[in-house]
Length: 274
Ligand SMILES: [Zn+2]
Image (tube, helix red, strand yellow):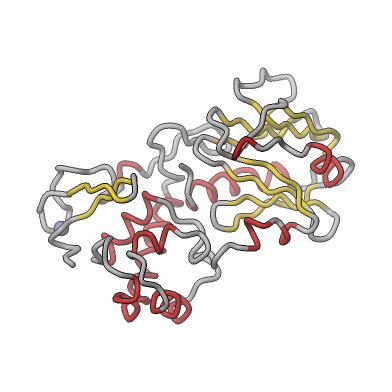
């Protein structure tokens, strides 16, 4: 699943291509997306057709496409397998193309999603889209150590679940949580409140994991590609995720894997003792 670094990489790739483009039309495949919900094409058309795109930015794992009209725009979430790319209108559409914005200059902004866990929705204003309104602070631009400390102190959840909860901290998923906890030397099952005083080090670890992912243009395990269709290069730089049975890069103990709530957790029991 694309996490903050993958979404940031796509946003950086799309920003110069989308800015100032006028939307002429919106097309939909007719198939429902996330939670089997239909795409509201009428709302997408009302917000975008005839408007110029002011820009695209990221909050957590969401992409926000802003149009000229103040505050309005389109929210895109990539789900598990979503892709968002600008391609020439004449180029064949990929299988599983579900939403297409026709842009001036003979291009199309295409949302492709094989598994249909992603979604595309209009917002007037964008800030009122429920998923965004409920989102916690972004760890790269909004979260500071005192805020993180207060959030941690208030939670009995295991630190891994805490960090995956988008209402507390926005943008982290299974990969970067594993990497951040390894960097911080925190066992994934530790209750959040017990690491509250280590908030500054944990925030540094989260940022280092995310910034490394962005610098290497995202982690491709299977599906993720950037705005140009290229795979990310971060998988080879992962310290624990997917490295079960390999020696820890710090202490040479064997990296372990455990499953909590159906999700795999990778960690070094020596560097991340309870
Ligand atoms: Zn270790």
